Image (spheres, rainbow, N blue to C red):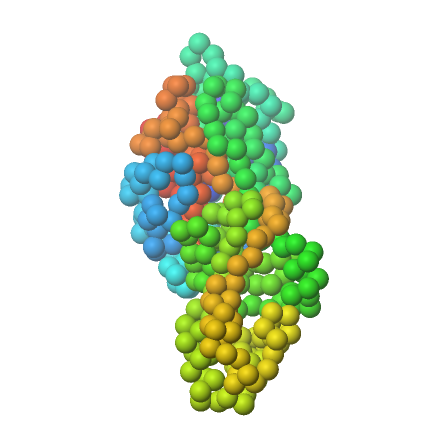
Length: 397
């Protein structure tokens, strides 16, 4: 219910995962809360999470699964609102879940049920909501803040920025959080795409990988000290699939990535042994037993000069094995914010309290969720960060 004076205790800008959680928590504490959303509906990114099935958290949530300039910042919030806390909330609404690989939890009732749960929480907490209300201006008053939208002006002593990052711009995502931070002299780390497919050079796409789009295989992919074992997908533009999305958050332009195409096999040793056991069999035949056949054939045509195993010497077999276990390529770039699941960067965590998420320089101003320089791995980690940061800020605003 809107107060006649348009005055509230808390104004939250952005009705995504973090904003909805924060609004409900603040409302339950007796705060008069206004939730502003520029889109025509709430929770738009939640609705597409996990392909609409909503990978809403991860049982393996820990600080090491998050990237940030300050790796300690996320620990406090993640310890105060855990995956088990969100599961308890789901149970009160009769929702169920299924655990997939690597601790990923999916909502059996799909993503709409999660958004409905959060909105029910907000309604119970008497949160006011204004849709189609993009913020045009935020200014500091002698006491508190004034927020001007396309529809009205509102005031409150506490304002929470929960506008996310600029990934998937077709859904209305933007970097307004950083613009607002800069306005108040709060430093930030510029946003860049994360959990995003990698693109490859025309030379690779029209050569070694031509006609191989659609092939998927289990790999270990490495970049620097980071490594992930999951599926990799060859696409018309480069590489995708969970393993590549994960490593993309660590990749820097110009860096090579290393792909182990046979993660269960020490390939050099295996090939040398096979050459003794089956000397007349061709390389492409044995590789087709352990790799997708089209990929095995192409590697033999383009890289390995296919012939019977006995015709390779020991050193050649060792080199072939090393290439299979350590295929090094330099991506040409990423597919950018258009397809990135989240954004790296955000408001500098050194500028915020890890307990309350309040800006140290600006009393009453808070930043939560993806707007903060904390980015999780693929698999429910980013929604868990949204729930945790929103819940924590909601205890203090």
